[in-house]
Image 1 (cartoon, one colour):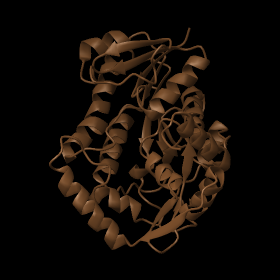
Image 2 (cartoon, rainbow, N blue to C red; image 1 turned 180 degrees about the vertical axis):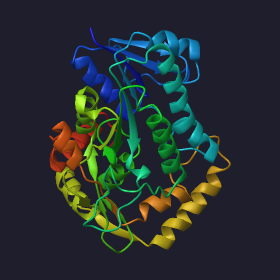
Image 3 (cartoon, rainbow, N blue to C red; image 1 turned 90 degrees about the horizontal axis):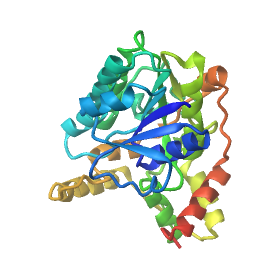
Image 4 (tube, rainbow, N blue to C red; image 1 turned 90 degrees about the vertical axis):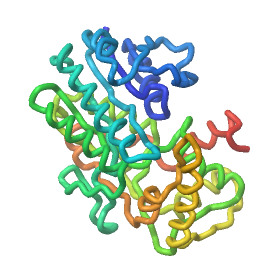
Length: 329
């Protein structure tokens, strides 16, 4: 039976990946820490490996007999630069080093990376692709790029694939949830006065693409964007969401200067908290860029990837889940 090791399996994307792997009758192991919340994996046929990405003995025993490793875990929000690089770069290197020692011939190591590695697109007609120069604009993006660089050092030693994701939404998500929460209250906040376009993918399609990339022979030592076919404006997304929610919404446009000011205050007040804030000055850099769009032509051509869930179906699926679980009314 195929055995899979997953990091980040307790999180939003990782838990959906675990669900799909279970459906495929794979034996799944998930790395968890003492502080991990396992509510999305509770009562599922998963073996929990207690430790972290520096637990060499624990990981060595867990990895020696697996066929696939999906490295989804990482640090999305942090208070210090060092925390981003430790969680996204150094941790990736540690996992690769241990894996190479105990199981260098595994079928595939799949790293989930981010569009922030490439940075935003220059305009609406030139989405970034796998050959675009990497120009991250935040510490998070730079730390994910460093993680990719560590991974590529093993391209000629192990079977490895890198998957880059854009903005991801769907059930269980806390980040984009804030957008749906505001929409449920009749408010759509749009940043700036110009048109902004984004690539956006439902978590189910992302997970399908990750597994497709992992199981493809063509994907060895390769990088792929797994994303939506189309690019969307937030105004379009808002209109679809409003219609699905049956809500009349008020549109509030926030100037870029105000966004940075709000981010500065959030970062200041967050410095007194033990937890990092979701909004800070670096996040404002992301929010104020015009084009976060990427091309999936390579994934379509080499992997046969195809987005299955339309934006309408994806938003409805997400809204229905939020309502069922009483996250929104």
